[in-house]
Length: 115
Length: 116
Image (cartoon, rainbow over all chains, first blue to last red; front, side):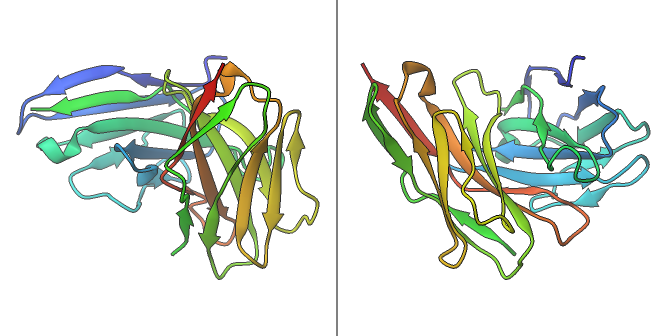
């Protein structure tokens, strides 16, 4: 099992450009999340999904959109990148129910720089 | 909304010694989980230990243990016999069991340095 993978690992954008970050998990998890991590701060939730075809806003959703057309994939889109979106982005997934004691499994992160 | 506070931005410990990292949280909920995650320079988030709020017994995982004080809303991490590989950023996190999202709320982290 690959676990949670993220594509790409690094990216540099110019202000106004768009891009999509891909998260994939092979553990058949229902829940998926996108977080961002900024210096001096913990991870903050951008958007999340509780199942295929569903998405919801988290703590810092402005400037981002998401889609979950397939259960194993969760896409994070930036339509018009801004320097304030320079950050490290983490995807995570979690199974539904108590069997796995609610652990979230994290991807390796994507470092995004917006110039 | 829940908040998690880690008041020690940086800590250091001598190799083989014991160190305690502090975490407090604010919630009105009764059903939740607490976690400590480790983030080494590789950026990978690694689960260190978890605690269910309804369990009074403190969780332990080898050299890692917690002091969970539910009434005080405190959740500290003790690392015994510190090793060089323990050097990392440590995050305390809260997860509610009373909503549909089940997302994690993180503290700002404590950077732990292990001195040889």
